[in-house]
Image (cartoon, rainbow, N blue to C red; front, top):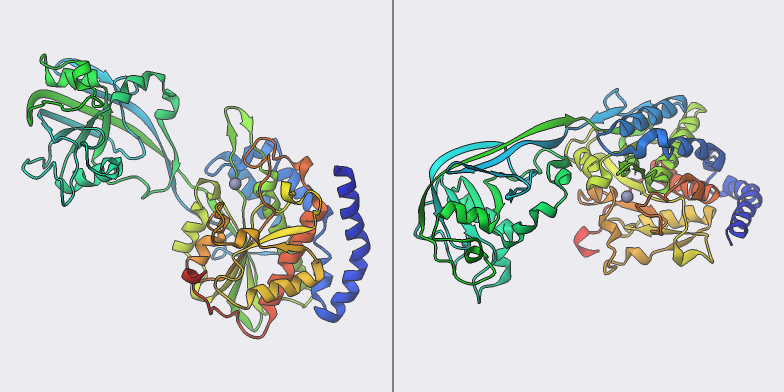
Length: 510
Ligand SMILES: [Zn+2]
């Protein structure tokens, strides 16, 4: 099956290439000359490096990501692309990663330890030392219009003890931790201790994972107070002799605990933050008479890195999009060198942080280097080097997502471009009711939220999606190059047409 597929694809490329060239001379003129530079042979060596073990899976804020960035920049430079981040190639942003140094709660003269007697989410908690001789019991810690545990008790600046869940008859969402934390914050609670029957199992948890936050963006951490889940045994120690472990199992109905508990308690949580500076890479081919309008072509160059010593090469996700954007950039740069540069500026942005939640593109949108109001479109490529199970029989396809949401002109332009590349454009995932919701799952969505029209080019998922098996040997390079040509033709048209792409639809009406 595979060899036949490859043969057919090669046939299509090989034979149709001269056909394309002839047709283009009539329809899009010189565009085809530079499209012809976007070839499997151009893309393959780049992607082989990006997906190699040397790049360590390109996880954001790691050495692998930084090496990938410098490799990409070197290639863009060689291709004649200019730096696009205010004279530099990279837009840096900060990310943090916290590690626990010490987590101890001393009750009377006994130390209780993080990961054994209590846990807290390091990302949501700040370093603190609290010494007090009073703990306030506030029931379930619920504060709503109809039910308020904080109504008649002063908890401002106090350490507060609550139980998990909701009393019988109340809606379950009253018990959501986030709501309880917000209520505690509003009431001025200093630290929140939650008696958790599940805390019995803390010893079984992965200590190493509990003690590190993973990489996160400033602002992602909550504003406090710290919330500590404690075992019933620890709660019993806090409350004294009259209580025992089983009495405090919060699954078992009413707890008779006085509101004010006199007990010396000292909470110490000490964590250390590492600061990293990952980057978005920006290159530009400056336009001519409309150079102050910007056509964006994007992909993410980060992936999942190395996890438990296993490499996640991310050849398709999104090495394919990254190398495609590099090839499209090189084509526009060559056109410009030969006097056929675009009228509008074309910005090639390779972001990091995508796999961590669209962080790099989110940062760019909050710190744009070109006015968003002058940004005409974002053509985003995320996974175009493979074939999904739905298209194994007819591999000449690409999913098009988001093209009709904000501009009525974009689909006709992309379809006209596809008059040259001749894919079956599959709009399945463009359906707003599709449960996969891919429209919101890659970097273009950050642009769409700003009312900038987008297209997301995508091959769908496959069994190697986010797996160590997403390797370069499985990439269909002929298909990848032709899909990149489709993006290129669409970018070419939008960059060169007389009128700016209209924004005549609303995101809400999609
Ligand atoms: Zn991914």
